[in-house]
Image (cartoon, rainbow, N blue to C red; front, side, top):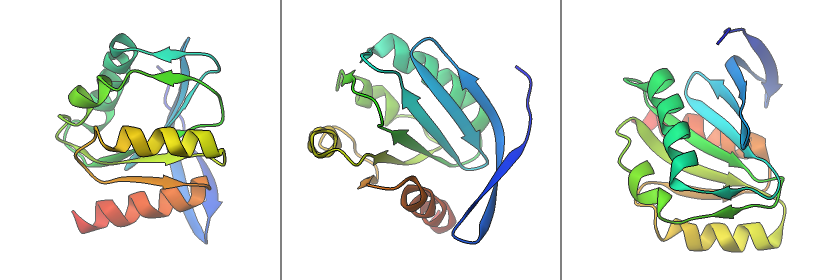
Length: 139
């Protein structure tokens, strides 16, 4: 994997991207203290997919705290069993869902019941990033 750095401005802050990955079931953008994952349309997110994402987070955030941001711009299904293993990642400090769709937000409310770490739902990616940075600073 070739690493490269890009940046974007959000609320007067520059954020550097560490890497971007495109997998068969999702696209992943990795930053210093958070990861943004966009699952592809029609995917049924299984424990096997989750294991792949866990390996990615462990390789980038083994000893550094991070927040997982799920950018829900596509329609897909999540097997709630995945949260049992995801919540066990020691460096994972929180989980954010970003969507403007009512149905996705209702589904996220149900998923939240399976997750025993901070879990928030947002309409805008910038708000999720701000929350992630605040959560990391508190740690």
